[in-house]
Every structure is written in structure tokens, then in C-alpha cells.
Image (cartoon, rainbow, N blue to C red; front, side, top):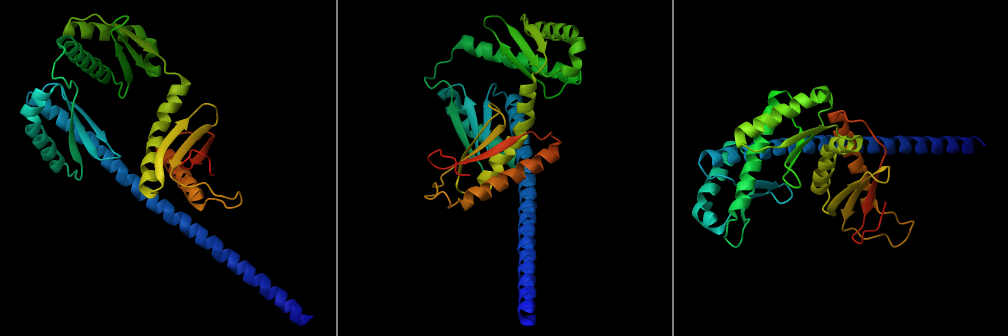
Length: 306
């Protein structure tokens, strides 16, 4: 009896120790993932800031050197800076100079390993003068509106311009300034007319709760896209939907669906946990309120596998 009792105690001790070791390994592994993720997110944040600085400085330099309206966009996925110009003649004449400006500024801010691509907006080489005048006017109106809003202390405010059926600007998100709505509208209308000789109606409206929620979560969605793509070669795409509730965060992959229902997809679980940790860290960083959400991992055929 004593031997049996000792054996049982020994077995219990072995199981307990094994359990503690397993739990310790899990905690260590989770901590390692978190540290790696925090470092990666910080690197992405620094890179995004450099991209913003690059686009701003290049735009300013191109304007200062007389190149006029040149569109710029940057693809983080492909690391390609795209320069959009009006016609082939302009491109042939100025391509090398514009490229030199971009490379020089990128070198100054220590931003490397990207390609420069050029896109001709009017492939026929014919410039629609009326459309060009409208575009130039809208750029000027946008600058006047943005500068005036910043002077009044409103930063990062979204607004849209339209010329049909009427010329108007709709400004969203100034909830704290709605009591001065009429005054601000008139100030902007007057500033636009004095700078462009164009009559625009300005409307300020409160941003809806759904738009605010969507806007607040955009940095989180960006982090999920960037970090998941960087960590998992199986990643092929991202989507989200607030309707129907709860929020659905969808990760598309090239994974195969398990053949048997009890054969769970370990890679799918890894991705799910990684995305959840990314959301948690980014939400804490930005002090964004947690909302109910589900993470859906889809295989190469679009089937849910988690």
C-alpha cells in the first residue's frame, strides 16, 4: 500500500511539475511574441512618418521648382512611390529631374529601398484645359480651407468639395465648434472668394457615431494589415465590416482547409492570436475603447478555418 501511495504522489508531482513547465513555456512564448510585435510596430510607425515626410518635402520642392501639379502616392505593400503627371510630353521632359529630387530628399531623411514609378494621367497626351483649371481651383480651395481651419485650431479635419449640382464644401467632425458653425462657414466662404473669386457654400455637420468609430479604428486596421503581412507569408489580404455587429476583422490567406473537422489548423490559430495581440497593443497605445469583435481567418477558397 505504501509503495502504491508513494507512486501516486510521485505521479501527481510529475504531472504538476510538467503542467507548470508547460504554462511557463506558454507565458514565455507569449511574452516573446509581444516584445517582437511591439518592436515591429514601432519600426512601422517610424517608417510611416518617414513616408509622410518624404511626400510632403517632395511635393513642396516640386512646387517650389515650378513643376506645378504633380500627384504623389506611396504603396507600403510594394514600396513604390508613384508620380502622377498630366501628359507624356511633361514626363519625357522632366522625368529625370523629378526622380533626382525624390532620391535626394529620400537620402536626406534616410529613407531607402523603394522604387519610383511614373503614371501618365492623360495617356493620349491631350490636356483638357477646363478640367485642369477645375483641378487647380480645387487644390487652391482645399489649401485655403485647410489653412484657415488650422489657424482656428482645427487640425486633421475631413472635408469634401463638389461642383455639381452646386459648388459646396462639406466639413465633418467639428463637434466642439458647432456652436460657432455659422460664423466659421461665413469666414471660409469669404476666404475662398477673396482667393479664387469663386462662390462656394460651406456646410459644417457633426460626424456620425459610426463614422467616428470607423475613423478611430483605422490605425488599428493598418497595424493589423502591416504586422500580419510581415509575420505570415500565408497572408493575402484584409477586410473588415462593422455591419452586422460585432465588428468582423477578416484575414485572407492561401492556407488549405483541414480535411477533418478535428484536425484544427494550427497556422490559423497562430494568425488569430497574433492579430488579437496586435489589436490589443494598438488599442492601448491610442487609448481607443474596446468594442466587441471577431477575427475570421479565411483559406484560399474564402472558407472560414478558425
